[in-house]
Length: 211
Image (cartoon, rainbow, N blue to C red; front, side, top):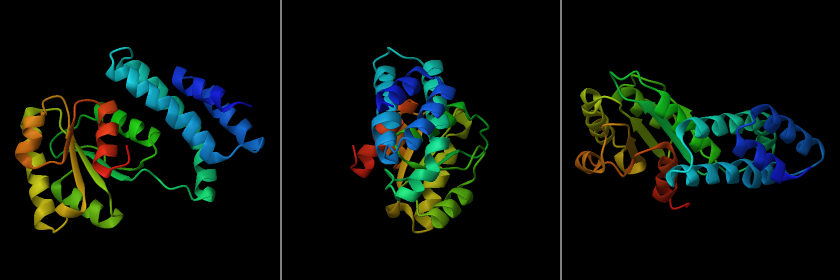
């Protein structure tokens, strides 16, 4: 069994094959951390790079991310035994009043593919819910998505709520979504802005100094 085969299955988006190969690799005694890093994470890193270069598109990236998730479903219990360290803990949510989640879900898949521990709060997430989740989970990054210009102010409200709760200096704020820009991110005092799922992972790593 070669980890290259797992890499190829994830990269090509073959979910059932990726899961089967991970199971075989584990049975043959390959280290879970090697399978994760050299197989799953390395494949998703290449997918992200090609996406940013315009050589891969959202449907292909989604398929690869789902293959990675299938592989991770087999791998995760073994990683827990291995006590692997994560890239960081990320809380993700679409802001209050906004029910769009495709972009957020793709960001979550890519984050998990890069070794982040993910807490997905879903859609229509209030500022209070973000604050509560950060207190509960002690996250390194909070990622907020907005797909409507009318819900962008909820990002401002959430950043203000984090400040009022005394949490703003304890967590990095990452924002994104179709109408969101770097200028807007700067205006509300966010730490980072990402225009797509692939760059969100890269920016998150930069924010934590793990890139």
